[in-house]
Amino acid sequence: MKIKRHPGEILFDCINYLFLFLFAVITLFPFLNIIACSFATTQEILTNPLMLFPKEITLETYKYIFSTPTLVRSLGNSVFITLAGTAVNIAMTTIMAYPLAHKNLIGRKYLMLGITFTMLFGGGMIPSYLLVKSLHLLDSYWALVLPGAIGTFNLILVKNSFQQLPDSLEESAKIDGANDLFIFSKIVLPLSLPTLATFTLFYAVGHWNSFMQPLLYINDSTKWPVQVLLRQIVMLSQGGLGDSEMLDPSVVLPAQTIKMASIVVSTTPILLVYPFLQKYFVKGVLVGSIKG
Image (cartoon, rainbow, N blue to C red; front, side, top):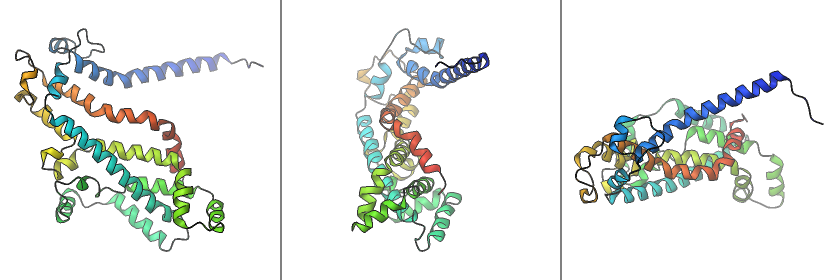
């Protein structure tokens, strides 16, 4: 039986859909503009900087950026840092969150107070640099991974997610002779897949977009991630960075075009990962955000 809707409800839905459509357009416009400007000619950018579709597509800007082989190496560095750092983050976070999820853990209250304290107070940039230097981690990828191995906020949410699992699961497993390591790896982690996928994405995006830490701790240019290298390209774009033989000497690329292409290059890889984790995203955040 079809339910007859009130005209007011239909009007509300129409207004709601229109608002959401306009909001989506406003949100997507900057991204489409960046992509369009990265493929546009110099003359078109100067005359129409707010374009959505370039009249003439050119690849000169991307040739300019990829004219130096260091960009491919930097992309590889970023991929390695993101994969290794995310793996360490998830491993350390889950290993610490699992015992904290048990209310009978001795000293649990004081441990949580200490963990929460780090959300409010930190040593700052200079003490962090001195610590990394004293551990001989400068010019090492570990300087970008170990200092932030556990995110406090993420740890609390993962702990809350673990707490929501029924205690009867662990009790049944222990009756069958399973130890804590088996319960953690074979029961807790598989049941917490949405939460783990969500925070895997959080950690991965953080590592991929990391800029200040590599700038402070990595002096060797061969170990620069893509974010630092693209900054150098943007800053030196007027100085002819790259292989000039690949470009037309009469072409002068504006710094704005270089910035747009750099944004596209730096954001595309991490955007390609999101669709694979999107189905877990909302569920994982909601599960971990419930107080336990």
